[in-house]
Amino acid sequence: AQKITQTQPGMFVQEKEAVTLDCTYDTSDPSYGLFWYKQPSSGEMIFLIYQGSYDQQNATEGRYSLNFQKARKSANLVISASQLGDSAMYFCAMREAGVTENSGGSNYKLTFGKGTLLTVNP
Amino acid sequence: DSGVTQTPKHLITATGQRVTLRCSPRSGDLSVYWYQQSLDQGLQFLIQYYNGEERAKGNILERFSAQQFPDLHSELNLSSLELGDSALYFCASNRGGGNTEAFFGQGTRLTVV
Image (cartoon, rainbow over the protein chains, first blue to last red):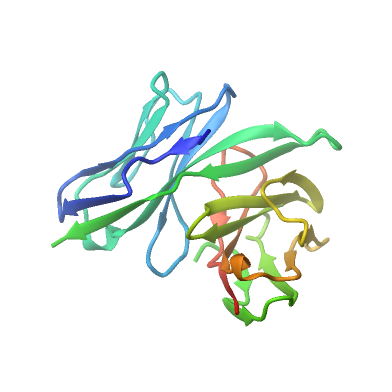
């Protein structure tokens, strides 16, 4: 079963308008983190925003905010006042903690969704 | 600039060959992660190292191996390459704690011909 689901393969938005990119997740771990990354056509992965499972308030970073609805297991990204430079692929990711068997040390890996391609129109 | 350096940026090689991808994490970061991004599989976690110790393995093929050296840089070795190994390989790093984002390098685009 997919752990991270992004149901919108592509989204279009007019410049200066707000857009919401959907993300739902599946985990039984009470402690987890949710991340959004942006990947422009140049290929690099750019961190946008983080939400911890125990955080009481929705995360915000400039024009980015995360609409975290824990009971519904959703972590939608809201971009306000879209700019042409926002056109890119957006990935939602989840970090679940695990314990390495041999050492007992913690390990963290990100599981990514398939992404949403956002196009901002002038 | 994320502070994570990957070399080379591009690599073209033939099937059956072996290549080594290199990653220098951000200063002070102890954890290194390797990811593979391909059109059909998306972004897949391969392996994590923390201060030289392997901490987690994902969908990493037996033909692939990695290590993290005492200076904390990491190498991903890909051998007996197949056409399907063509992908963008990312290295990411963070302090090691789960509540911090991982910073990604620019990636190495591997093309197997």
